[in-house]
Amino acid sequence: MDHYVPKDQVTTLLDHGLFTSAQLLGGFLVSSSTGNSEASPQLKAESLVLLGDSFFKEKEYRRAIHTYKQALLHLKTILKPTATTSRSSLSASNRSSSPSSFNNSAINENEVKFRIASSYCALNENRAALIEMEGIPSKAKTLQMSLMMGKLYRYTRHTRAAAACYKECLRQCPYIIEAIIALAELGLPAKDIISLFPQTPSRSARAPFDHLESSRWLQHYVEAQCCIASNDYKGGLELFSELLQRFPNNIHILLEMAKVEAIIGKIDEAIMNFEKVRSIDPYVVAYMDEYALLLKTKSDQSKLNKLVHDLLNIDPTRPEVFVALSVLWERKDDRGALSYAEKSIRIDERHVPGYIVKGNLLLSMNRPDAAAIAFRGAQDLRADLRSYQGLVRSYLALSKIKEALHAAREAMKAMPQSAKALKLVGDVHASSTTGREKAKKFYESALRLEPGYLGAALALAELHVMEGRNGDAVSLLERYLKDWADDSLHVKLAQVFAATNMLQDALLHYQAALRINPQNEAAKKGLERLEKQMKGVDPDAPEEDEENDVEDVDGDVEENELL
Image 1: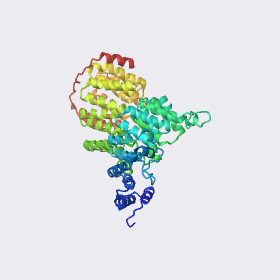
Image 2: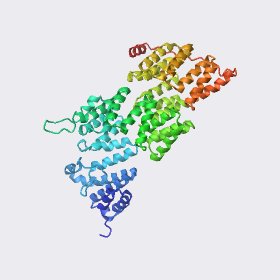
Image 3: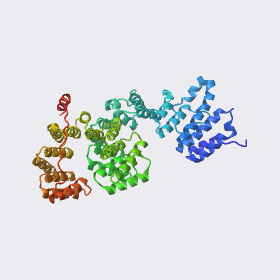
Image 4: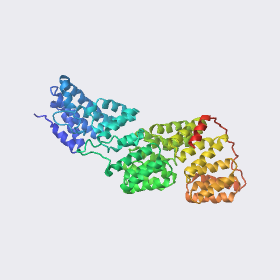
C-alpha cells in the first residue's frame, strides 16, 4: 500500500516522549486514505486519539479536546450496533491512564473522557471538566480519576460530593496526601479520616495499612493538618515539629510549618524555615510568595529582589511568582503591584495569598469596598487570620462597625486560643470612644494568652495614649523593649514622647528604630514631624475621633463568655 502510515510508530514516538514528531506523523496518519476510510471508523478513532495525545503532551489543550471529541464521535458509530456488548470492553478501570496506553485493538472511552477533562482543567474550565468526568461510570474510575473528581467538585462548591471522592481515594490508598489535606480543609475530624484507611480483613491476611509504629507518622500527619484547618495553629505546629524530628529536612513539613508561622506572626521562625527549604532545594516555588511577604515585613529588599529573580527563572507561569512580583512592586507602584496580584488570581482562582495581597493593596489605595471583596474571596477559599484581619480593617475604613465586629467575633470563635483574634475584637471596640474600656480588656486578655504579642502591646499603649495615660504607655513599651529589640516599639515610644513634648527622648527612639530598620516609613515621617516640633512649629492640628458607637447586648454576653 503506497500511502500506508504505521499507527504503531505514532505510539512508539509518544512512548519515547517525541511528541512533536508524534504530532507530525499523527497528522499524516489521520489524513491518509486508510485513516479516512469510512469503512474503518475504528482505525480513524484510534488515529485521532493518538493525534489528540500528541496535542495533550505538547500542552495544546484546545486542539487535544477537539481531536478527542472527534475520536469519540467515530467511536459512537462503532458502538451503536453492539451497545450491550461494548460496555465490558470500555470499562477496564485497571488500565493505565497515561495518554499513550491504548492497545491496538480497542479504545477505552473513559480514558478519552478523562483526557478531555484533564485538558479542560489545564485551561481552568472546571465545570466543563466536571461534565466530562460525570460521564464516566463510578466503577470505571481509577484513583487518578477519583482524585480529579474530588478537586472538581470542590472547585465548583459541591462539598459533599468532593468529600465522598476523597474518602474513596483514601479507602483504596491511605497515602494520598492531597486527599488527606482536602478532607481536613473540608472539616472532617482526624479520627474520621484515619478510620477510612484500609484495615486488616482477617488475621491471616496481610494488612495494607495498620496502626503499628511504622504507620503512626501518617496518623500524626492527619492530626496536624486537621489542627491547622481548624485554626489550632499551636497544636498543628507541635505535631509538625514531632514529624520533622522523624523526617529531618522534609521540605513539605518545613513549608507547612513556615506557612503557619507566617500566618500567626512568628516571622523570624518562618523566615528561618523558608531559608532552610531554599538551601535544601533552591528550585521550590510553593509558598515562596509567603516568604516574599515576610521579607517585605522585614524590609529586606536585597533578599526580596533575589527571590523574585530566582522565581522568574524557575517558572514564570506560577501564581506564587506574580504574588512575589506584586510584593516587590508595591514600593514603586501600587497600580503595577495590583495588576500582578490580579494576574496571580487569573492563573489560579483558588490561590489565597493573591486575594490577601490584593486586599491589602486596595486598602493602601483607599479602596476599602474593593478590599473587602478580595478578603471575602480569600475567606471563601480558606478562612485564616489574615482574611479576618483584612475584613475588619476594610469594614472599619468604611465605618461599618457592626460588620467589623461580626467579622472579629467570627475570628474569635474560630480561633478561641488566638491572641490575635482577641486583639482584633479589641481593635473594633477601640474605634469608638465608648468602646475603649472593652478594647482594653481584650488587649490585656490577648497579652495574658500570649505575653510576647507585640501587636497587642502596641495597641494597648496606643489606647493608653488616647485616654491620656501617657505614663502607662511609656512603662508598658519600655518593659517590652527589655526583651524585644523591635523598631515598632521604638517608634511608638518616640510618638508618645513627642506628644508629651519630651523631644530629645523621642529623637533617640526614632534613631534607634531606623538603626534596626532603615526602611521604617513611620520612623522617617516621625523624624520629619519632630524636626518641625523642635523648631516650635505644630506639625498638625489634633483631629477628634468620630464617635461610632455600637450597642450589641447579645454580642457583649457572647464576648464575656469567650473572654
